[in-house]
Length: 345
Picture 1 (spheres, helix red, strand yellow):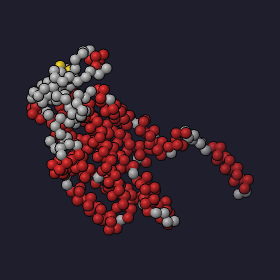
Picture 2 (cartoon, helix red, strand yellow; picture 1 turned 90 degrees about the vertical axis):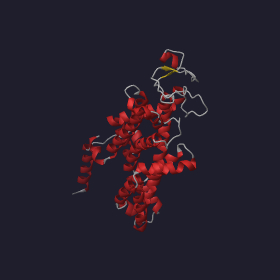
Picture 3 (cartoon, one colour; picture 1 turned 90 degrees about the horizontal axis):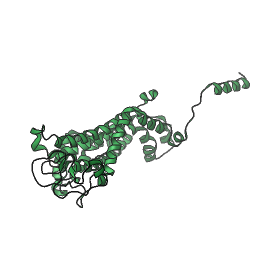
Picture 4 (spheres, helix red, strand yellow; picture 1 turned 180 degrees about the vertical axis):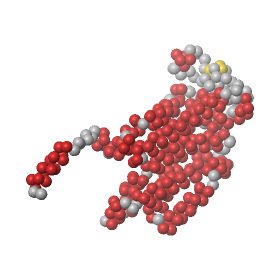
């Protein structure tokens, strides 16, 4: 075949093969990141999850406007007396009435604050606890997940990359932590730390961090074991690239996506576990704005929920929707990042 014939074939190929135009945003983000973000905003499951997350984020940011605090500690739920019988939604606020925000009279049609969601046993205002509890849920879920993921990623990456005796030691330590039932282990450690650190958010959060990293370590280790054998990793090792650069520049970016999906789903589960610890009395202090704390006020009235339904429904629905939103986003993120699903998008 002559050079002219080869040139003609190349020209004909370029004429008939379609070229996909890339937007400026795709060039800036990269094809893979752009595809993932586009999938997240076009996936119906993801859209529902993102809308719910946006709602909770709005409530958390606007908490001082939605529920003005009446003390120096905004996370302390205000009380309207000390009676043991819960009051239904719409009951007038009698003592230490909060300051009325600008939106109150146009929406509620009254100059007096009422208990929008009623009061729990002990006259704790449920509406205030639900609104400010959103901030608590975001803080707890994000912080525990971030620390747990950081520890798990570090241990899993080092274990998988270096292998040998280091892998065996780190994985046996991981097995020991995983041998304990998660809720029971967190409850025990939280109860041990409470007399030392005092009652509050830190003991249960530290307890959840101490046992929450194992899943991240196991998942990332299995992904890195397959990625480290690929050609570009072996080529980097041959030319003398440092281990740290190979691990954090070439291996982790290609193995981290399943761990990100796990992290998004763990945020909601950590909030539920934290609420369970508060319900059992070893979480947040009494009166702290936390959904589990509100549910704990309803324990004495669980047998009469037909009349006092509001003491469980409002904090319970908030807890369920918060967890559901993160699970929906995690499911959608898994579908977007799964190579087998990319052909359908």
